[in-house]
Length: 174
Image (cartoon, rainbow, N blue to C red; front, side):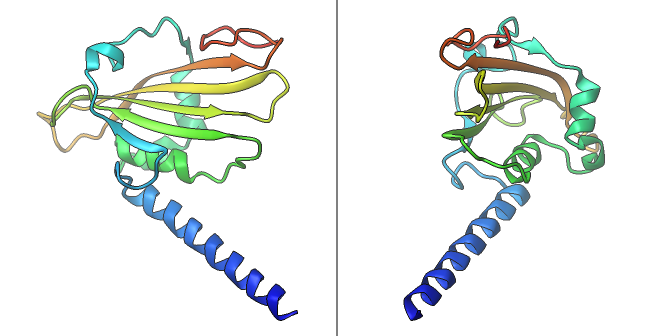
């Protein structure tokens, strides 16, 4: 009985620590925090905001903003706060093998563009195995009182075996 009691206490402590870490990420995500939240140092021409959108299915921007309640974050909206929001939302990770969020500012600060790539792999779906979002944001450094703005959102899919394409693309799964 005493062993079970200590096991429950240890489990609660680990759960509380994990919850606190997610809250810290949402408030100030940094490249050092979790492995799944990074800020890229790659060349923007390779895969950043200037990259090819053609492999993504464009999403309705207003629907994305409303669905993620970004209109309520107007005073604090920036690439890092959006990354924190994505990682801290109360969505079940059941069946997911991996979830990553990456920010590519496309150059040294102060950059006026950012691309956020949110990838979810191992989804508990009979047709869609993985989903990836490309969220493009802009900001005017000449007007520091203005906030970042989401200007484009696209989506890619990778299907379960026998349910469609196995490589990333905009084609839906069957």
